[in-house]
Length: 209
Image 1 (tube, helix red, strand yellow):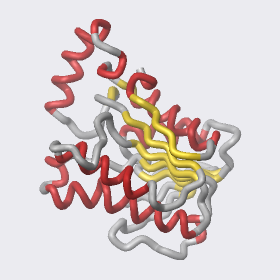
Image 2: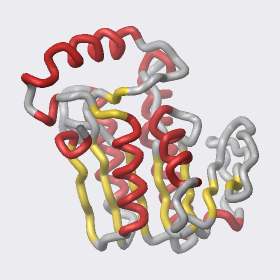
Image 3: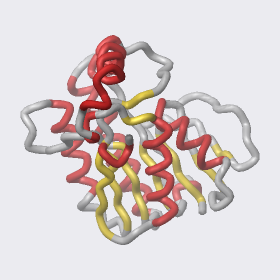
Image 4: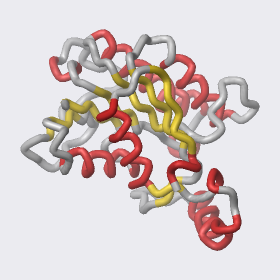
């Protein structure tokens, strides 16, 4: 299987890439990025501008897309910039992939994703899920983690505090509210890509503990 992985340098995406490169069923990982990645015999990492994606690049013709793109409002700097990264980029990628015949798309979404939500973050995730569903993928999977556990390159104060609290009280919480390790999320995404089950599927946070 040829896997197109978007967001390979992020917390979840980097876990997906390690798992995919170690998976015998994956013959090649295509990871369009903004900066160079270490070389690997089964990795193609074209440098791209997500504002101007190369529409006719031959590497779009993959067997599945895993999208782990995402940012924070603080990092993005504005709601408009956040929406562009978490909605517009994934939808642009999905449209090009679908145009080139890719049958499966897996999105790292979020618990509470709902285009009708009063919370901006949840609304953006819901908008992305809603718009992906219109593109006609044979297999479409939304992975909806809660708080993601793992070591990020960037320091997020709110997430760090929430992680400490959830580690302390986690065993007493319902499974859907416990920390979801990045490696577990990545494994679920890769398995959905390999399975390519027909229809729209949701992997809930309770399944990612």
